[in-house]
Length: 82
Image (cartoon, rainbow, N blue to C red):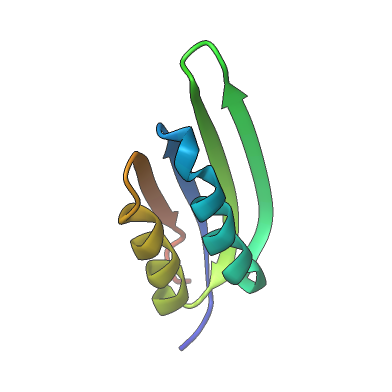
């Protein structure tokens, strides 16, 4: 299966689960090209954006695990195949 480029947006509403999010991201670090995290203190949330380069299965596995966590919202945009 060929690799795909994508952007993953993660909104962490329940900051108590941030450690779980970080553990999952660490386990998928081989597909993460870049990461930017912004704490939005006024709203008591954090926003993480990722650039990923992996197979569709790897990206889906990571986002699926993240999406199962309480207080976490995940959205993905994958570049079209050329």
